[in-house]
Image (cartoon, rainbow, N blue to C red; front, side, top):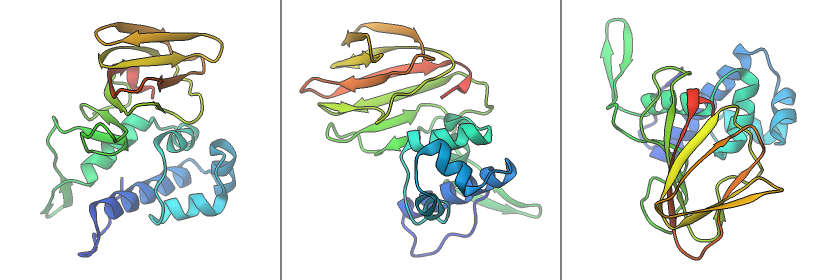
Amino acid sequence: MQKQRTSKHETPIEQRRRIIGANLKAARLNADKSLDDAATVSGLSVPFISLVESGKRGIRAFELRSMLQHYGYGLAYFMSKIHELTDTDVKTDAGTVVIYKADERVIIDGSSSGSEETYSLQLLYPLQSPNETAHFMLRLPAETVMNDAPISINARVSGYVAKGSVLIDFLNDEYTVRQGETFRYVGSQPHFLRNFSKAHAVVHFTVEQGAL
């Protein structure tokens, strides 16, 4: 993974975009894929992906996920590595060694703010290997959806609603899970997670073997 040099005028958001872009490009080249390949699997345009890879544009997690899967990476593991690179570094004779606190949450998508008006998907513990079970916290403001397009996850998903209520929408079937209730499903069927209510929702869930 590549850290690169930080500009003294670079904001944390700019740094994050730059590091994500550089490593997304490296993953694409390592997988011997073209920008056209990336555009085909993600539904994004080649110019937009080029801007993302150069750190000039941000990208939503589930747009990023489709490209990473095509390159042989999981989203949660990739973002765990990005989390390492955006924290404190120390210099050694062998180069740069990145250190980080293992209990820090990894921002996968959205904002780090705890505000009820902000959407966020956070990995509660960084993954040390691609095959670990990933533990997430999802904050969904009123009347929002976790993902813009239905997703499929080749793993079991389980969790509980800590606050509010959510709708698990399998396109043909819908299930409402309310505060204090648990859920479990096989993620391979395309689905959405929605907060259809007028109140903020918080969901904790796990995905087996880092499959997100």
